[in-house]
Image (cartoon, rainbow over all chains, first blue to last red; front, side, top):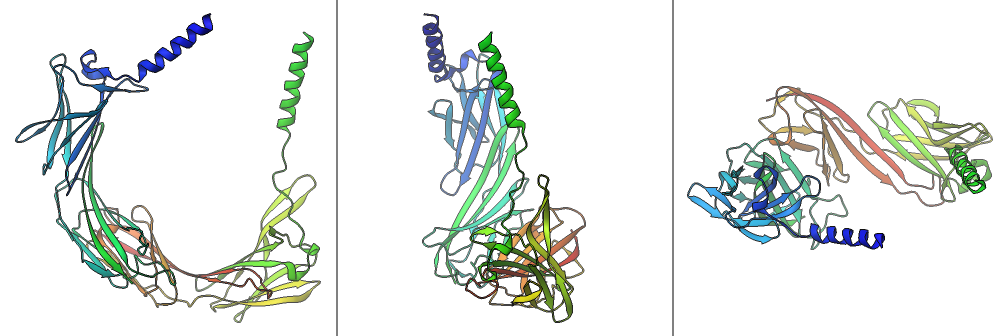
Length: 222
Length: 236
């Protein structure tokens, strides 16, 4: 009989842990928030994960007067719950200093400042030979943020050697050497569609990541 | 009580068995058990322009083999005398005491691009092969360069080869492969993650794989490499 009781308690705990906590029961100091803002040409979603608990955090849903907003210069943008503990909004063309905030009446508000790096446009040729220099340019922005440049192909077929370039500063320009993106002979064959992706990233206090990403494609030939 | 004692003894027995040292290295088959035509010699020859290091791994029937008895390897070049290739690294196995060598290494003070490899058995030159290295080259860089501008490294090109450049010393190290050796590489201003003055170490390698899997000596692929290194001072 005691074994049955222990089993029921274990099952009960397992079921309990799958339910999100209600925010009004939680002090602000116990709420954990991670923010991922991914601004790109096709939209600028910002995703916030709310949780509570130190070791195995449970998803947290905001109820009653608790609200999650992105504070923009033009006003507050409400965030909509997408799943248990997950909230989203589209920043549109917003960039620069923003605040993700939990506004509440039961306790003090929670404020996560984020810096969304400035938007930019990539300029690359529509078609390029791997035997020639490949010059890529973009708009130089004001930091601080880290910058990464990636070149890859769509795999139909593979014709470009993938390149990842962490850049020490926003130079606004990067030139690949002739054959730097080419496989060695006799593997360097064919044409394919390649892409250049540039990503500006900032990391805020706590678990806050904001990126500004752009991608352009170009035809790569021998 | 008897049961508990038996269990305890069993535990001690298990502990004692697990604590006994396992043989750290397996003895390699001796080369004199094979006809010389059954031995395959994988050669790795690397030149820095002044010296060429030769490393050979001997295989037979898909396993590494140790040279024993009168079996020996030598290397020579036109501008230097013959040197023996000695076993390296050598592991000493305690019981019974044995020395195991997984590869055979020698250093030739040669500036030529052709190395002659000789396998001897019973003191006689049993088999001989010429190993040709890629064309030599000299790296050219400015003595000092500002990182605010592109930095160009030049050398004698070899369009039939690939090339790999390694950059060390100014931030995290990174490699830049070139599918075709054009004889030039330009480093971009944002490539170096550093501040202030720093010494940049540039190493370029030109490697070829020599397929030799036929019946003729050395009966295995050879990897031949030319490597050069230069340093330059960089400033912001």
